[in-house]
Image (cartoon, rainbow, N blue to C red; front, side, top):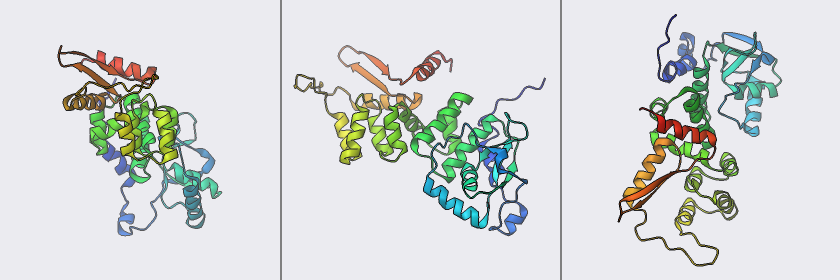
Length: 299
């Protein structure tokens, strides 16, 4: 039996995207020529990828694309693979927007390029194509990274290298997934910016503050100031925090640990006794399992 060698990110994201983006000789001679398809297939024989990171498709943008397709056809073929669940069908690897717009334009057939991608490669290409070409919202991008890490054991470092992003960028995005679903919804809809959302990570009042941001038009700086205010007990007296409760070094350690594991970390250190505690906040049992795996890791 042939042993499959461990690989980084599939066959390498650059190689995968080259499969999609490399022009043919004819295209090189005529840059504006449409990409040559392997074949044309009935539109009903093409199915979307259930693991597609993009969940929201703007109706206005789809209508514009549909009008263009109705007039000029599909210039860039869809990238598909044989559907592993349905014989004789195809699963979209890249181009779901074109497929949806083609349906709206009432096309009966679509041009496709068929590739023998495995599950890892399909997800990787879908994420890269969306990030590079259509700008996922922060939650969708974070969910794509989470899929790669959970399903294929990719680390933040490997993702950062492959995506051309910093590790802190990926870690900060993934921390957004710890926010309540309602807050994530505001972020998906564009009612909150990523800056607002990052400031709310770890807050027990994230939902109410998010609503206040939307209703009052608070800036990111306003939210950050709000988060730094000491808590006020029900008796009305303000509970004062000890001077220097969180020094710059402690905050830096919190930030580094949060970036490393993708979850909010709080460090409470008593400088006088040298003792303290570290708290990691998780949003569900899946994230608790992640923490346990990290603690049990030999690496």
